[in-house]
Image (cartoon, rainbow, N blue to C red; front, side, top):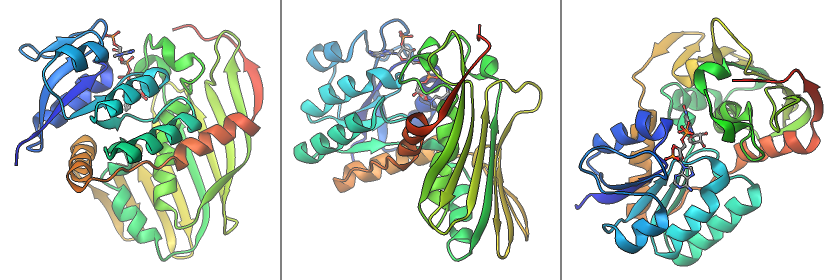
Length: 308
Ligand code: NAP
């Protein structure tokens, strides 16, 4: 079978760190082009400074991976879908819930694949965690997602702008795992968002959720963490405690700890190829809806200014 010709749109950190190696390692895809206003892709790969230019004048592509900030993703996705090009959306899938719904409808109408990716769901411990929890009673969940924004997002102004999500940019990864592994739906009850006085998005958030069985779920997100970083989810059940650490890579069950190879982005590309070959889309907005609820109902507290 011929590889799917894909263009990467937005040659930033995640495109370089993960998308390019995953595409290079995949038999299902070949990198046909890159698009980015300022940064170029690998030597020898055709490059364009806008998607419009690529789709008009560039080499033919079957698919695009949109690795831009979320605020510009909707317009880019529409441009691709209009031309029958399959679309891989980095997380979060957009800047608003309604635009992602509109994209899903458009993709369905034109019969093209739209994939709203959640890379953390492909972390090694997540599938076995979901299987283990499927027939257990969840009693309590604690999430600690504490990292140093200066280390992980230096100079990324878009992340602090409306639609950039602030600390929910990493926090939504925890929610993508949570909504995937818990057997029951989750909803938000209360939240406190700490917003630096010179920024539009939160630097920290303290949130209480519940599942529909009444199990309390607490999430502590903080970008001011220095020293050890934590990306942990602990689920207490009627048959003992499950812990996912290192962003879902390491799973600890009452029977012991499993360390498996990190295959998040290879897993995402394999899923995207299967969706394209099967003529299907995958657009789950549950994690994004919980973030929207936190912005909708959370109490805002203004905190000290943040400077990079
Ligand atoms: P980034 O380093 O700021 O890169 C974003 C890139 O998008 C920039 O390099 C910019 O290109 C490009 N861009 C902006 N507007 C564009 C447009 N209209 N057309 C084409 N390209 C455009 O951000 P990032 O960290 O890679 O994050 C991008 C997305 O991936 C975010 O949604 C983020 O949540 C997600 N993500 C990031 C990570 C991570 O570890 N960083 C992990 C997983 C997912 P120029 O520089 O050429 O102007």
